[in-house]
Length: 511
Image (cartoon, rainbow, N blue to C red; front, side, top):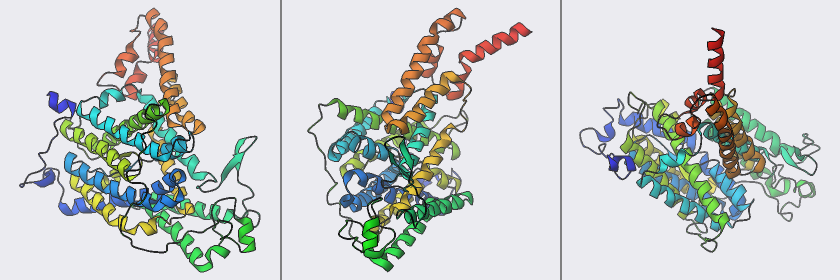
């Protein structure tokens, strides 16, 4: 019992000759698993250009090809490892939101060298491995109330959407303003704003992607990226840097384009110069820095990365195992397989940091493959094989223009807001802390501040209500007890809120 519940013991029964991966038991076939793995890859493949795009903002445009290769390589390794160890149909890759925290909070916001930030990712992965093996991962999750966890997902979604629409490596619609902090990048006409061409193409890409998603087309985000990329490449090949209307960076190329002197102005359009290249990581692999291990800033970064990975991984496992009907009749997940899923996620983060990318996590897009029939780890292995093939095409992925990739970031951000679709906003004890988390993340440009704000506000509210509950002869510490119970959920927390027993008391008096 101790070994099973601490994560030291996993369930490897799926390695057998009679029924490999328990495919017959789960009512699936090798072909179904291969097809489902392909569908999952199509829904996840956008992470290669998008992660490289986000990370290169902090690690340098010159490392973009390295980041594409690193993203594909770690996605391959982690997905195969997850499929073999856990027998769950989950694809793994660098997590959206955590890559934004790495680039825009740690490196660009706090001035941490990207080598040091990679070291923080490495240590967070080591912590996750250790806590998985000693069974403390679930305990750590319980420090964050369920409502705040819901707000965290939506807050990261708004954070990503905000990044996706900005003028710096985004769609270009939002720019800085000294009075209002942010403003619309006007005028929106092509004749009055050189960047408007890129902006409107990005709107077209976003619209096409959403239309494909509405029609339930598999791999819609990837198809949207391909659509926008082909437009950008075709124009760049046809007109070149000197005459292109899609020159980058934003706000710096209008004069260069009009004078035909784009090259001297450090302006460029995106188009590949090669198709296939050996997967060699030149600058980011093993680029660790251990100089500032004794600083508070470093360890806050480690804990933030670690905690977000715990929450992200747990949320994906909970959501996708339910959709895949992997749980038992009581709704419990198989402990041995779940332990191994956590371990694969943690080891993936360690490997990813060694290659030069941010925290790896299980992807909720895995649900697409589950809907298509994927039920076993063979689905995850197929995802890994596709990522392995894709890393040889890094020259293509590294030339994805921002007008093709940034709309997908905005769409992914919107989809992450589904974490609050069934939230009880009428319960102020739970909704206000969740809302604090939700808004503080994009407004402070910092995921850690959002978590701290939500948890602290929840704690202040519950401590403040202790005398009131005591006076009403209700357990004054009921919320704290529920927080560490096995049955905790957002609905359970709301059922114990003061508003409910006040309403019940009034109903009894009326009768």
